[in-house]
Length: 259
Image (cartoon, rainbow, N blue to C red):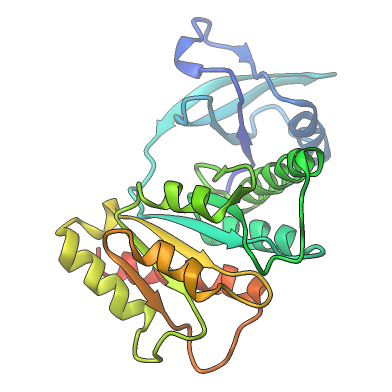
């Protein structure tokens, strides 16, 4: 059974000089701790502000103060990184994608406005959605026992998403017009061969369009990047909220079985 997980925004546990100290939890995490009814002696996992990963023992929990001592510093296993570039979808679809893609193991989430995106966000709505998605990602990371939470970017244009994707080792564009023979597995093999990197150290961007998909012009912008491939997810046309979960799961599986 995985330990309850907590992510700290500012506290760095290596700087704590006393053997027993209080965790600086935000309001949501404190509420979560109370719901769990954490007891003295219980083990919890804590990821601090610099992403160091610790197992701690609860020493006391009174009111809004949760005090612990560090039982051990844990090592995070090296994993490939998948950056999900997701075309903005309507309704609660984006919430679903963020939640389940986080459980699958994405490293970053990049919401992207495309020419076919039904959703149009002004500055106020963009900020609110960003904060909501960041909160969902954090909750999903805690629930799934991850040793890190994904970085959630503010909504951006296609050009902005291309700028983020260019820092990845490879870019895979999920496109319904790609040849069926252009499978994700084949593209991952090409990425590994082309870069010569250990699959565990690869950082791959996965691009998924909104309802209606990506235009050929948008696909071409991503294909202009080094080691970029358009891929098919099979003969069926998947909903955007399905593709945004299936594609990262397949990519991480293909990378990890080759490690």
